[in-house]
Length: 154
Image 1 (tube, rainbow, N blue to C red):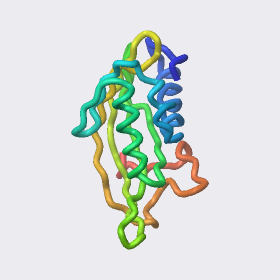
Image 2 (image 1 turned 30 degrees about the vertical axis):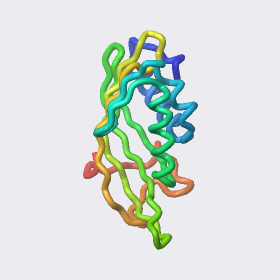
Image 3 (image 1 turned 120 degrees about the horizontal axis):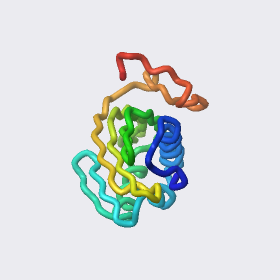
Image 4 (image 1 turned 180 degrees about the vertical axis):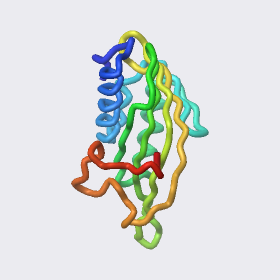
């Protein structure tokens, strides 16, 4: 992902977004953290962190809780060394009775990059919506990039 460097064009910004999507879908905190500067600054909802180690710790906990995680990121806007992203992801929480409660998270991210192509700052705002198994978009075998998302959800 670091090989795509600012200033961004429409093509390079889209490539950066899809590279991030693929990286996050790996659910590998160590790999994901390498796309950020060693002193990266994050705000994820109401949590603040600084540095790769805190990011790794955060992502490890995130993916321990968010089972079945599957993400789609779409380019929203870009300028120079900044990219804005709209995203959707689905995940489930296992209840005490063994049942799965599914959620879809809707959100926006604001990214700022260093000239190296590593992300220096990431700010995320998101909301979780309870969904049923039948309402899921990102079921097994679905290409998240080919799925048509209606205006109701954009």
